[in-house]
Length: 277
Length: 313
Image (cartoon, each protein chain N blue to C red):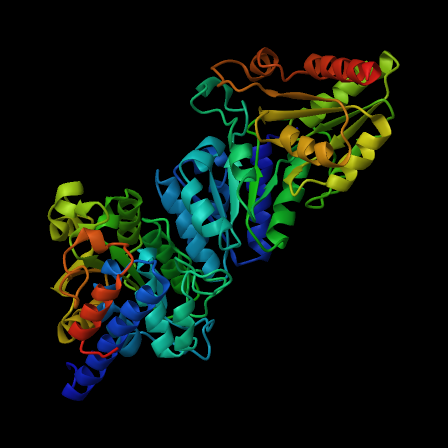
């Protein structure tokens, strides 16, 4: 069963709001990572507003699904997701990266309700996800662990240690999502360190591999359903995305990995996203 | 006399019997670290991740998030070199309840040579906020330490020795409180603060010094962080001369921790017995300790020097 038109419309409205939030916030504080946040908006929306079993009133519930943003620099999209979901007031977004705030530059579980694991140093999230997934099995709990991984981040070797471990333990309660936008801080992944055929690599590591357009809400819904139906191995979703998606001058540009937004750029971005200032 | 690693493995099994939250991970050296004993007793709670120390440490973070008490095991030099990113960025940063156990500390993996001997691990671990650092003196202290670190909620680095270390304690007299040094012998002339195997050496040095009419106070400072400042200051105020002895680099370890306390609170002459910023080499353990200045005569000589410095002040 796919998404109803009504649900798609609801999710689309959320993605629009989240993109606006990201631009508003990053323009206001003049620091933070827009590119990799905009590329993961539909992924985050699908997870938190369609698939994950979470309750903002009980952020520590032992039965909740877990989410790890291994690419911790996409904090802005994580924060706007949690704010839209009700974990904290949306006004808090305006304090991003400011002294004394809860919204640290990278997700901090000690300060922010709804963050399951602090991240920032790349290449660690999937390993931690394996520990969570194994714990769920030990405790006979049916929660899923979702790990969002950047494509550039796959250059960190520890990911591949974790992919081996996920296969060894046949963790069908672990779902990795690759935000495959093809761009990293210094340039394209192709120029900096080519990733090769990811599908073949993941299949060779004995993972269930599914691919989709990471901006297509209907397609994302289907791959998450497929991932949960897989009973014998962990699933990795290769979500093809566009870095900076939704803001024309940011799309596909490594220069927008982590750059402050100017006034003119801000006005253009908001207009493109269908908002008004 | 039992090797410290053997005592560790046995105590971990005991812990597993009474606490089903305890899980153990190893990176393909479980036969060496003796975490294999836990694996044999509790196969469902033991995870051998292969030669992948970083993955092991980050997996442990995940276990801790789900209220498990993970003990991760590999050689101390690998723990400090290969696993430090997840230990820093996940375990220490988030104050996760992971017990990081570095086996084969110091020169104790003697024949494997300098590539395998851990001299820098103490300094690296001590520099990480939230992480406590513990180095027990013998098999009894190691057992007590395992129980204590399991009881404490939070991240700890527990550094062990491979060898059969001569006992300082016995089964019924090992007081072990995290963050509290043990005064093993009171004295008035010089203070010797040691940990790990060097505690036994310090006690031997004390005997020699006693024959010379020098009355040394010996402290087992098993917890390098948080250091027992009160005890350090009190003893230094009494003796006015302090020697530290550790099987680790003198840069950043126990000696540094003691110096940090004394420089601010009670400046007195100090001498550092430890590894002098060099890597080790292959050889017999005892011969190596002597070659690198970690034997009993080295501690005695350091005591003589520090007493002379005090007298000339």
